[in-house]
Image (cartoon, rainbow, N blue to C red; front, side, top):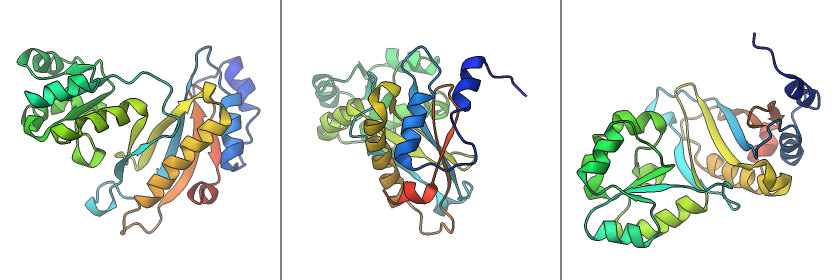
Length: 234
């Protein structure tokens, strides 16, 4: 078993592992127990009572966090012609409208945080699935990242403002960042509330048991358990 450093052990001592905290108290502890010298990210981890192998138990959508993520989001847009012009004017950081960019991505380049595509470019974007798929960068209609050219400004603005995607992974977990330690507990709670409300609304009809456990933690910090019932009724 890996040994933790002094900073981690000191932080972990502030958290009662047998206690399921109220969401507000959990945010305060997550901030207080951050052990990094940089402004670490606060992440929410959910253990779901779903079977990821079944199509009727999938969970995937996006949510706009009221206070964003506290970082600069680099947006790449697969678009051509008028769509490329609209995307450029709307503030997209990278326009993938030629073979040079596509070959660069195919070679493993992924220095962007989110990829958006117009429907007519999905054929080309789809060929990059081996690179984009494992990094959760493949544009997808369910995630709001495949849009008509006229809707690109809204999609780009939302992505830069703090829209995050949540999805059930192969191990029946959901992992989502909700901000930085510098946000403070109050803003983190606002973002957490927005996330949980969205996930609750995404409950599949086939789900018998939905959210089993909820944990919040800073980068390299100890996990803080949250009362799942309170988290779902914010």
